[in-house]
Length: 305
Ligand code: PSU
Ligand code: MN
Image (cartoon, rainbow, N blue to C red; front, side):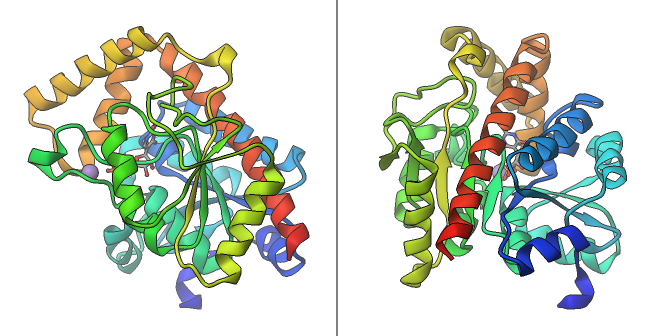
């Protein structure tokens, strides 16, 4: 396994010395945001994690290596190449590695690679989930099954309403994945603070979240934990405005017959264009907010070990 895994010296040393590390994904860089905002955001997120006293570990596949702790140049490459980089979920990993290619990792594959390296806390924007119309298309993200089997905490701003948030929560329940609301009872909906659905547990401090995750590990409950951190009020979008635009994007995707792994990147891009970049600003801010919370939790977790 070692021959396929490349952990940066900084991340390795942090892990060996029980210093906090925060994993970050790369599909958000190559497929989730346009260039150059994608690279600027990814580098700023790393800075936020450092300022909070943790070591950032951006995860991707670089020339066939499962890379934990991408360099600035590698992040720049992933951002510049954008959609040309293969979007890699769990099932894609062996092929991209065997061929020595580059891959941008989703929440699912980032969790898997983080767990191989021993990184337990991961910050992102939004997770994949059950798509609207999944009763017909069966389009359910592998992120949900990964949360069931891989023991990594994912800090996100909820799920975008390109998904059926109610069904996504049902699926998480079935899979035994706890959904924690940070300082809220409401499941956030990415661009807005509320989705109309409730989380399983409200916890108000990073310490309490770390404690619950620590217990989950100690008693041998395999699987992750989803922490839902609402977008700060000042950056939240008008709920009707964003839901109308999401609806338009979903209809357009259906009309064009977009399916499979193309669906999420198509919708993300369409929404950004429909809202003239306003949604991108919200997206960037919520990722920063998640990086801050994940860093606090990672620090608390180190104190418990
Ligand atoms: N949702 C977002 N932004 C993203 C993604 C989802 O708001 O960038 C990305 C994440 O990497 C997530 C992936 O893991 O899309 C889910 O893709 P799919 O639905 O094909 O599993
Ligand atoms: Mn899908």
